[in-house]
Structure formats: C-alpha cells, structure tokens
Amino acid sequence: MPINLLDIRSAVQDYLDTKVTVTVSPFRAEVPNAIGPGEKFTFDITAANANAADGGLKLINVRYHVKVLSPAKAKLIVNNRGAIGGWVSRSGPLETDPELALQSEVSEMYLFPYNLLGATDTKTLLVGETDTLANIEGKALSLGATDIQCDIIADVDINFLIPMDQNSATASRNLVVT
Image: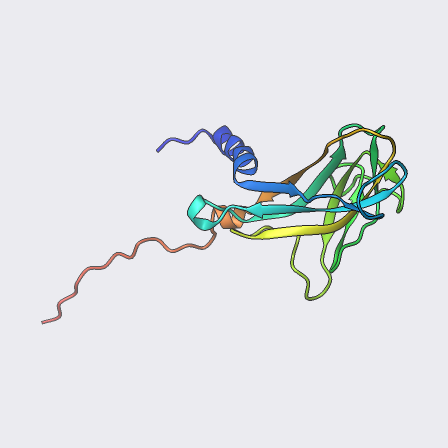
C-alpha cells in the first residue's frame, strides 16, 4: 500500500481539528451576577481526546493557546496556577518563547502545563482522556462583547502511533523425529 508521507502531516492536523474537542467554560464573575468594566472573572479550558473506538491517539507536549478576539473589551491575566499543578504562560508556542510576567494583562498567551506530584498529567492527553486547566483569570475593560478562544497545540506520540520492538507473525514447521 503506497503512502505519501505528506499525508501523515495532514492527518495529524486533521486529527487535532476533528478528534480533539476544546471548550471554554462559562465565565465566573468575581462580583456575583454580571461582569462589568474593570471587574475580574475566571474560566476553565478543557481538552478532550477521542476514545479508542473513534480512532484516538496519545498526544504529548500539549500546550493551550488562549486569546481574546477584541482586546479593547477584555484581557487575560497571567496567573500560572491551577488547583493541582499549574502552567507557565508564554508569549508563543515554543518552550523557548519568553515567559509572561505574573499578573500582566495580555490579549493572548500559550499555557504550558506542569504537574505536581500526584496530579493528573495535563501535558499528555491519553486516548479518551479529558484534561482541564482551571481558574484562568481575565479582566473586563469596556462594555460590549468579545470571544475568548482556545485551541491546543500537541504532538502525536510517535511511539504510540508506530510501536517499537514489535514481534512479527510467528512461523513454524512441524519437526517429526523418527
């Protein structure tokens, strides 16, 4: 069966676009009832990987890209924390991109999860797994509406996709000793 290697690249992007679901939770106001200009709010982002029956693959090096579409309406606040574990906020998708200053207000950031002992590994999305980064902070700036978007950037675990050290089918022949 001939395979065009560029098809693998396209298949990985298609997998992330169609088999991984990313959601942004409802916004929680710091002051109950509504979010007004100058007020802070929190929200969660969740990534859910496809299960085995739907062709799920193990994803590693998971990073979350969060942005505000209308930065004049709201900003994200760099807080680097979660309930268990946390994340490092960076200006770009690479580990070499600069870290953002804590408590700074930004329109876009990339969250690099890390895990504390005993916490769920949010840097990996196993087949069928769902991970949540909780209590991301934001601040409303002016009246009106804007969208806050999130997607993930991840690598397919090549060792899951192409297992190493696998056995072939076993050959045998009956030996008769007389």
